[in-house]
Image 1 (cartoon, helix red, strand yellow):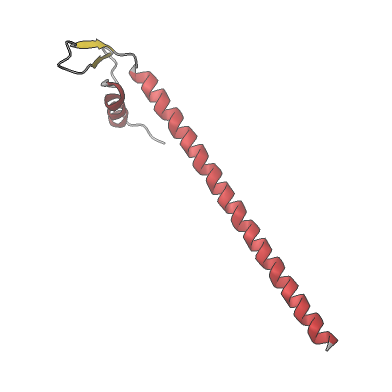
Image 2 (tube, one colour; image 1 turned 45 degrees about the vertical axis):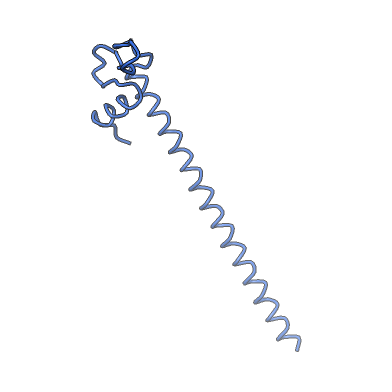
Length: 98
């Protein structure tokens, strides 16, 4: 996972109206309600850490799903092989007995 300054800036702007420079730490509040700018409660580094943690959790979940799918596929292959072996043995026994 790579984090470019542009991507971090975009996330910070969407979440809190910040940029990665964190110079002032001020985020724009809604206009027209008597507010100009107020100190942001979410600093850019906090946003980046949260984004990184969320992506790590998502990557771990995807890895778990991949492992489960591979194990399920292996189980299906083993079951199919066992069924084929049983059918072959039954056919051989029936042919030999007759």
